[in-house]
Image 1 (cartoon, rainbow, N blue to C red):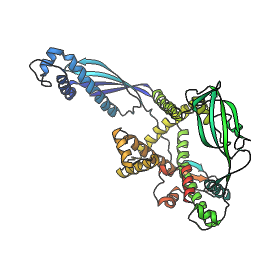
Image 2: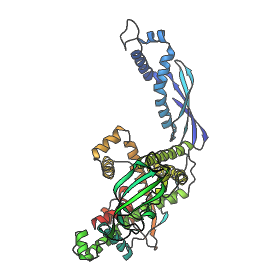
Image 3: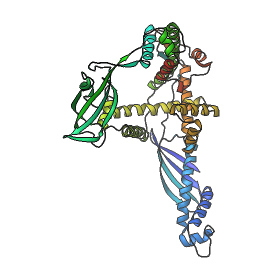
Image 4: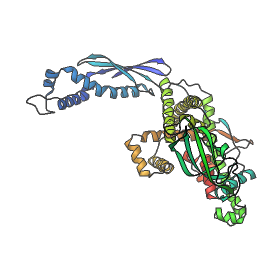
Amino acid sequence: MKTAVEELSPTRVKLTVEVPFDELRPSMDAAYKKVAQQVRVPGFRPGKVPARIIEQRFGRAVVLEETLNDAVPKLYGQAVDEVDVFPVSQPDIEVTRIDDGEQIEFTAEVDIRPNFEVPDYAGVEVTVDSAEVSDEDVDSQLDALRQRFATLTGVERAATSGDFVVMDLRAEINGENIEEQQANEVSYEVGAGSVLQGLDDALEGMSAGEEKSFKTELVGGENAGEEADVIINVKSVKEKVLPELDDEFAQLASEFDTLDELKNSIREQARRNKLIDQVVQARENALDAVLEKIDIPLPDSALKAEVDARKHNLDHQVAESGLSRDAFFRLYQTTEEERFAEFETNSARAIKVGFVLDKIVKAEELGVSEQELTNFVVRRAMEMGVQPNELAKHLADNDQLTLAMVEIVRDKAKSVLGDAAKVVDSNGNEVDLKAIYTEINGAEPVEEEDESSAEKADDGKAEA
């Protein structure tokens, strides 16, 4: 087999592949067997029709077509490996010549990862946040913990922002009750920001036993987008009461006997979280520093596929929410146009990041061990709330284990970037990532899945 490469653009090539007929022999034998199973010839059992009879009865072209359908995709894969290109789209393949018994020729146009060099990343200077824990950090964690142990107490007064009300809701259009737009005994925090516009304003000043109506646009169901009268009937008003910060609270909220012990634990956990944040920031900032040094042209097909995938996920989220499209974006305080613009920007960055990390994976000869893949599946299963063996089977059945391994090695490449960088904090102090690894988990690099600041902060509160 002989392959020639023509560069159509920095992100697209045309492969011209010439294949001697002898290399088609396995596919041709398989084609004869397949055709023999499909045709019926008197005097022969299914699957036992000789090749010469098939050609006499149905023509050589039938066999050649089946041969090429089987062989060309495999030959294309071999050609890609030979010329060392990295396809990022499905190829446009055309068989351009068939010299029966001699050779065939086909072309394949495909978008590829462009050629570029990763700049030297050793000693790249990056800045991360300080790991110092302030009294305000501790107070913030304590306040969040108090919120978790707050109690609701009934009050004989009008509701204000921050109070909780129990209410019945129903909606009417032109005086006709809408069956699906009613709910009883709904608990709601006044001022929380309902997607039902006008609800918070209507609840302010209402007392138990009062009823009020207001006009608004319905956000779900068959009448989504229509204006309706929403009637509120407040059953009760309750205020949130936070526990006192004392030793009794420490015993209630933690395993500690005193408030001072609880504060010390929170301070230590906050410091641990900040150290993990430093690792995350070092890796991400080092990656950003590398990206800023190179201009990588993006294949249009790859960018379109990434954007389309994000739009598809968004459509699924909207459908799952049960809200109208306008209400959904209002809930997240954005617009469809703003979200689509974010998709364009974030998709372009994601593709560039993948290109760069893949180059580093190859240069550093990074791989994935069986134990690393197992650890990945276990962590991901915990996040999803499923059994690890169920997730492993799902990944295997859907040919997603390769994607999992790509994610693992790309995370390793990020670690390489972070470890190679010169890291200082916002106060100008040098940050030793290896020392952080030792303190956090005994010299092992911090796992990517362990790096979410929000999750770590929540864990710290729970442990406290």
